[in-house]
Amino acid sequence: MILTIDIGNTNIVFGGFVDDALTFVARIATDATKTEDEYATKIRSVLALHEVHRTEISGAIISSVVPPLNMVMKKAIKLIYGVDAIMVGPGIKTGIGIRCDNPASVGADLICACVAVQHLYGSPALIVDMGTATKIMLLDQNGAFTGLAIAPGVNMGLRGLASGTAQLPQISLEAPRSVVGKNTADCMRSGVVFGNASMVDGMIDRFNEEVGIDLPIYATGGLAGTILCHCKHNIIHDPDLLLKGLNILYRKNS
Image 1: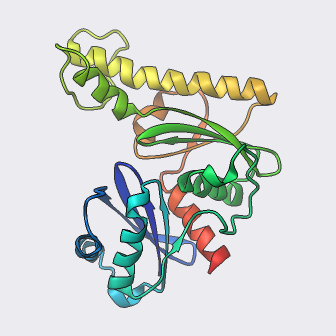
Image 2: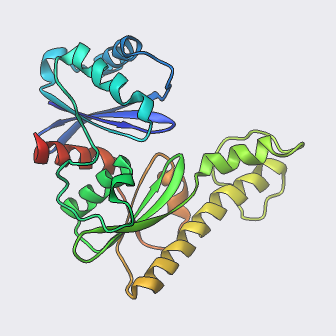
């Protein structure tokens, strides 16, 4: 089994692949203050819930947008499973071109998403990743990453409403029954859920206008399921896109 690890700003997501089959997905909260021993203990416990045994892991690959955790996670995986995890970064074989001002600055999560879409679905394409930030990426007709737009994430906006105002409360994230809210919580939910869906729709229209064609759209990220069902465009939701990209990258680089 290959262990794929996506370290995000909010959560760390683990996936296990046997060939191309994803056998489990697990999540823990990201905490940049924890040591490799603490992470090793947590990872071993969480994966045990999914009946993953130490001897099953034959390799590992990590993508990270939290640099302080890069070596911490590598050491934790080495401690538990005795394997040297591959880090997604400059120099890794991706199979896609990167056409932007500074290719070395492109985040590992973006590379994983683009590799997965190119390999599984083809190009050109738009990729919407709704996590801590909302990212909309463009793959050109040759499968090259050509740039993206970054907007504040859904939860970031929701927390900003509650913390930046005197009378708006913390609320759960779910769609209200109507765009016209009748109470404070539903008013906030309308703005956050339907507002983000409209933002995604509007940005897709702008990408399509600039490229000159209607692009296929693929989406991933922890908040995609909540928002994208309210979008007007036809968007294919693949919640495990980044893990699939990591598995493809492992096979290219192992």
